[in-house]
Length: 327
Ligand SMILES: [Zn+2]
Ligand SMILES: [Zn+2]
Image (spheres, rainbow, N blue to C red):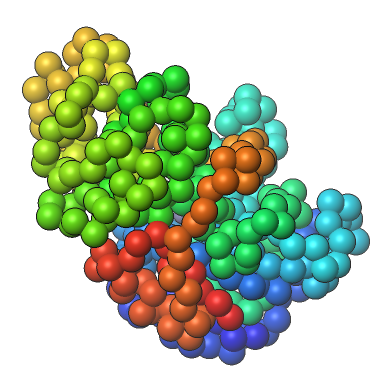
């Protein structure tokens, strides 16, 4: 099969012809139809996440069809369309797994990081970590739901019942979760790179009631802020924009260092927290909610062979919505 392969941190992906993977007893073999590109992929390429499998097939937002399956597979049949997220496997027996927090499992395996992912024509994955996808979504449109949507959803849930939500970094996750927040009757304030008028217009078009530069104060205090940009300097900025008792959620897997800030920004029971990975319950809830909320996904499709171009577009901030690779 053709794949785009990461052989070492800091190197561009290289086109490779790999042996077709085989499905183990609990695994399905998937013919990849689409795989979205996530900022986490850039962090892996840049060596900012420890110990990736190498060489590695990146990609953890996979949509494809089951073309083979192991003897114990009972959740899917040949031909079924499935989506594959970042969480590829969890042990099921550690304290985290047994308390509904498999996202924190000490032995978890992650698609496109510690196991091969979807920048390829074929991918194998554990059937217990695959999900059916609403037929109202095309393959390309559905792919970003699998991480941008899911991690965005988990981040939004961590904001509790906040009525006014600030979103810092209006990329793939933000553009999906702004729609969910609007569906839930919340008000959305979008913060972009200073001067990025196109992103601000994009945010308003998705229902944001206000959009402006990340350096600007919102027109009213926020009940909660979600930070999707990998910029630690936004943490004190978001805390300053958040009212007493509010929550600031860091949704990314990696961020530049957070500068020191006055305790007064955190005091008055503001909460600062991160979101790590996802649980299967997050996936089930979100994938049922997205069609009900009529979430539409903005995508830019690239042929698989142009994976490096898609990654460069994401890095350069040139995308509205998500880049998606199509084998
Ligand atoms: Zn576990
Ligand atoms: Zn991701």
